[in-house]
Length: 238
Image (cartoon, rainbow, N blue to C red):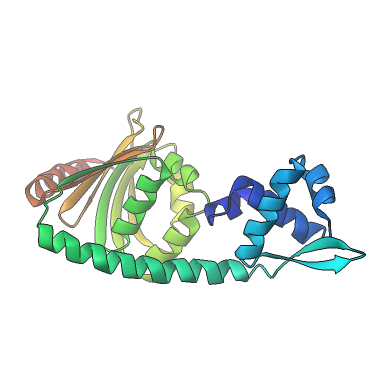
């Protein structure tokens, strides 16, 4: 079990390390945990308190000392569901505000993995998409290594259709990852760039795999024009 996966679920680095340690070796005191994880004892009290508040750690009194143990990992889902409920409520309120202010946002720029995740979720809302990935698609998937298996599973379940032009060096691996989906692939012969673009609905997205920067543009005219160029390239690629 890697603590990095728990960090993806919202735990801090020290919370994740401590929880994994308690799952692996339960019934430890604050001092024992601090020594084994090389964390200051005073900080360890705060870490354990936060895990207790999240329902992920508890303790029993043994000879006047608190001995800690890990609670059921399923409690991770309960906290996620609580946040999901709050998120739905916040989103509903924000949409009302957005409609009242009538703000038109046509270009959005995102840095880091958050933008790549947002782009993936946007594509999963559509019935079809087109993507020119060059050499950057697999690097993008590597940046989302804990998330993309779920995205691909949903892609297959929803029968989303797509066309991807990708580097010939990467097409075999991508074909394997997308097995069972309705995605068609064609190879790009020339040396590829790490900058990619996707077309879906009335939007286009430009994303850099090495710098993890994503630009999403909502413009039907631009989207339709770029789709024409994509189709021309698709027809010419063998």
